[in-house]
Image 1: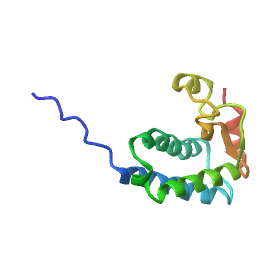
Image 2 (image 1 turned 90 degrees about the vertical axis):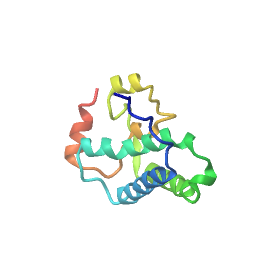
Image 3 (image 1 turned 180 degrees about the vertical axis):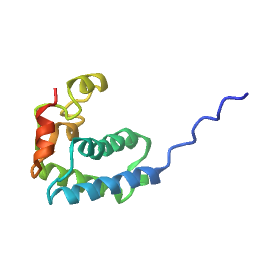
Length: 125
């Protein structure tokens, strides 16, 4: 049996879709966040996926989505506050080598949140 073929080259359309998803999330975030920690982790993971994909494409390939990403990041920063720990926990941050400087989305939480999320955030080690 032959091994499966290697994956094809990355598609810039996938990155643009992630940027669209991040932009939509950050726009909605300004209205407040009503979900739990699992949802928050999924939402901020989108930004990590974008970071990982960005080096594969030029700014020309990204096109207008480069500006869209910049605007979405600003919206996220405006709708969140610093959090003293990584929302995934210290162990995951250490393992993944995430830092507040490079992976800042993992070290922020919503300005306007809810009791369940706040309770869950309080248990992060």
